[in-house]
Amino acid sequence: MAAQNTWSQRFESALHPAIARFNASINFDIQLLEYDLTGSQAHAEMLAHTGILSQEEGEQLVKALDKIREEYQQGNFNPGIEAEDVHFAVERRLVEMVGDLGKKLHTARSRNDQVGTDTRLYLRDQIEQIRNQLREFQNVLLDIAEQHIETLIPGYTHLQRAQPLSLAHHLLAYFQMAQRDRERLRDVSRRVNISPLGCGALAGTTFPIDRHYTAKLLKFDDIYANSLDGVSDRDFAIEFLSAASIIMVHLSRLSEEVILWASEEFSFVTLKDSCATGSSIMPQKKNPDVPELVRGKTGRVFGHLQAMLVMMKGLPLAYNKDLQEDKEALFDSVNTVKACLEAITILLREGLEFRTQRLAEAVTEDFSNATDVADYLAARGVPFREAYNLVGKVVKTSIAAGKLLKDLRLEEWKELHPAFDADIYEAISPRQVVAARNSYGGTGFEQVRQALLLARSQTSETGY
Ligand code: ARG
Image 1: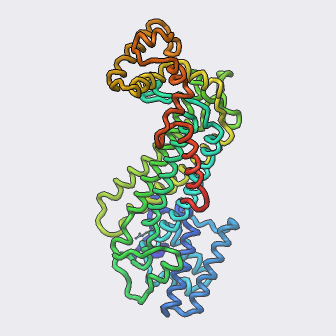
Image 2 (image 1 turned 180 degrees about the vertical axis):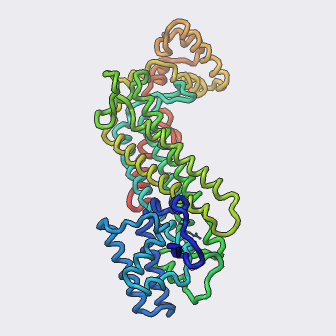
Image 3 (image 1 turned 60 degrees about the vertical axis):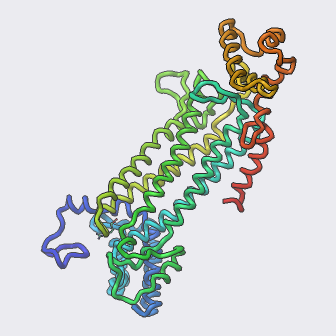
């Protein structure tokens, strides 16, 4: 029996059905169809441009490829496992449509440079989408921050109350993380956007192709200088996965905070019904499933990064089938990041309400103004370390007496140190504690207002 595959003539028999399934990537690489068609159209145009095919042949191929695109969009292109992968599926359909001409498309090309081209086109597109989603996420953070410049929230280190903050300042920290994420993706896309098309199987081709021509048609910034590197490089995918992992770190940290804030113990936020879920048994429950899922999904993206690094590390040059494993890692990471960004943006925009009354109380019930007492003395000439030690003692005795710093009488302050005066009360009020941190990048209201302006310009059309 003659084998059925595209490479069948060299083979006596068909693949074992289980091996065919094992080998096939069509189930997932069908997601590359759009990019495969675009890449093939550029290749066909180049073949005609260089005279490898006639003008007419080139045009016919481009048209037929358009038809396949239409068929797919209408749900009429559903290649099965026998196609092996998206590249063979397209070629097969092409031959059905235009006969022998369809068999000419693969002149001067290999699936190795083809799949590399498709993957890069896909990723370039996805990176743009993710960058736009990040921008939206940033804008929502800014919208909320603008409403909460003067809302105070306890700031923590070691998850212990440290110093009070402007809530806007806290939110702007996440804005900055997202800003780096956008920049990182932009940088990654510079290395994604290089064309391997024309590298052939590994060594280039005997045909007088024009690699710059296809690169230009496909809007690549550059072409790979070395054909072996071109077909086997997946650095760009690893870079993307590490950028995606860092995005997930940021979303996961925010999620963790929202989960804490929504707990009874913190009670800093209320979750709205549209973004919270109930329990099947405990009627009183309202669960923060959205941030929990984001936190939970983070590991998947980290896992894909790890899988890709391990997959690459032992590969001899050039193409090896192991590389087929890059796709599911990329697809799942892209889908996960996009889904998480969408969900968390909705959660912020309409699923969360800050309990400002509760927050205002929270910043008055602790010793998070202790640094300001030390700063008060230091500003009046007392060496900071001496002031620090003195305040440490006051905190200790206050805790023992069940008092807060604001409860100390002026005589008590003066007894501790003659530099204390009536203005100490103002200096340690939460609002003043925040306002006073007016150093560049600090939580002082004036700084936060400046930071907000700058942030807005960073997400504007002209910002990047
Ligand atoms: N489906 C393959 C992949 O995803 C396409 C390239 C196949 N190349 C080959 N030499 N078998 O990597």
